[in-house]
Image (cartoon, rainbow, N blue to C red; front, side, top):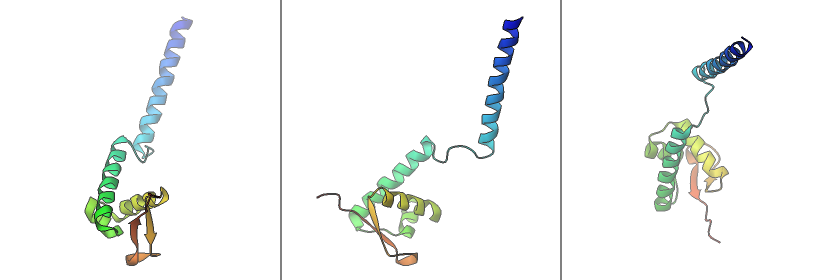
Length: 106
């Protein structure tokens, strides 16, 4: 009897945990960048770096058009590339901002 009760309690606990996980996922508590999103971002980054090698600079607007993304996504991606040291921002804010590749060869 105790074994049956313990089994039911354990399975009930696992079901409760799964319910909480699904509830949190439904409320938007999922990871911001899943594997699929990371793959998409990686593709956008590769495309942008190829563009930069050819054109020497890119703007937020050009990044948006190149990758068919929103202004916010372009800004996040370009900021990440700048933090990682791949590109450097020229200009402070607005339409005058351009990003150029950082020369990594010494």
